[in-house]
Amino acid sequence: MVEPGLSGRATKAALWQVFSYGLSKVVVLVTTVVLARLLTPRAFGLFALALIFITYSENLTDLGVAQALIYFPRARKYDDAALAISILVSLFLAGIIFTAADSIAAFFGVDGARPLIQFLSLSLLLRGTGNLPDALLRKELLFRRRVVAEGLRAVTMGTVSIVLATRGLGVWAIVVGYVVGDLAWNVSSWILSDYRPGIRFWRLDYSASKAIASYGAPAALQGSLQALVHDIDYLIIGRILGSVPLGFYTVGFRIPQSTIVPLFWAVSAVSFPAYSKVQDDEERLRRGYLGQMRALMPAGVGGGAGLAVLAPVLVPVLFGPRWIPSVTVLQILAFYAALRGFTSGIAGLYKGIGRPRMALGLTFLRLIVVVPAVIVGTRWGIEGVAWSQVLTTLVVGSAMQILVGRTLSLSPGKQLRQMVPGVAVGVGVAVGASVAYVVPLADWLRLLAGLGGATIVGALSLNVCDRSFVVELLATLRGRGKLQQDKQ
Image 1 (cartoon, helix red, strand yellow):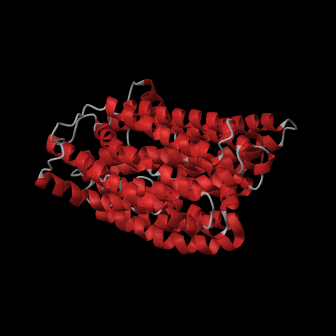
Image 2: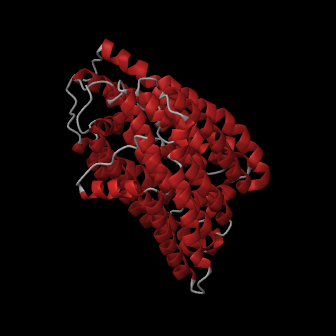
Image 3: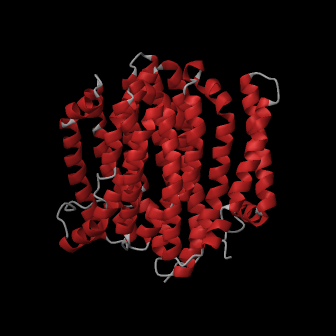
């Protein structure tokens, strides 16, 4: 049976997740602004290189058991088996990364990367053991509690990094802050969860372990491939162009990562458990997916348009004049971040209806398209890489939308109609943000004027184009209603 009030719970969970992820990313952005004035582009590039393999491995640390826990009904045998598997796998992967640090550093040809990679391998243990309580909070749509853990991680990481940077520790300031932040998240996640392992949790139940591994393995592989898809540009830039261009690229990407992408990650995090609860109700799946598109497109396209217009003012004001090479990259990647709304939630949909291998296949498709495109893009520097990301996301995202339409029996017309308000908001935001170049003021005042103009004109555009959505969203925020999916 379908849980009553699931639509309202899912909407509130999504809003809490947006707030949680957005808050953490705002803290990360503020931290980046401060560190950009204390550290060099090479320091940022070194950290990005060291983090690539850690980020990739983090998706394998629990062998997908966290996602399996969300899919299967709650039972003690599943929880205990998941914890035991997570500990074993995270220890194994941390050992591999630690011992392979020399080879990884040699691959990039960068001195000083080996100890950074070895220290960051500690985060694999922290993520592996923290994924279980976090998954249980997600399963029950308790995203309000996750605000505490995610916020604490971001604040701890930022505080430690800034303090150590002022002490002259360079790139180590970011690395140590990252690991300490993961430690804070791990501890707080366990405190907020209701699961406590028994003394014999390590005695695996064969049937539970087999079920978890069967579902979790392709889900974990899909997550790792997805991480590789999103980080392959860093890897290729670091290998071909070097750490300094990677530093400029990283800072250029940090703003859309902290403003637009959090929305997509937040919705994806909620969509998986929400879809899993209505996996046998095709009509509710259709309405949920259309509602998701309807909500994402205005924010994604509007945010991308605003960043693209304001980038020439935004970068020097936030990071300083030495980061001017990041301006063009930010403008291009703003469109890439907006297009991520094309694919957001699709993997969660297929995992939620018990088809994790389909999600894996789609992610693999993206990988085999994006790798050669990014390599070719390096011929034109970091700007060429950014354009390759835009084009491949547009092509692959369109193909994925067609596939989802067939899976849910949705006509292309219904899918396209959900995108119209987003396009209208994007145009409105671009027009409103242009006021920054009309008023002859100091740069920071021009930036504020552009942000204000973008917000006002964008909101008016949404109100004109999709008034019912605005009314429903305001009602939900006030707690007087719930956001209904578009039933057209």
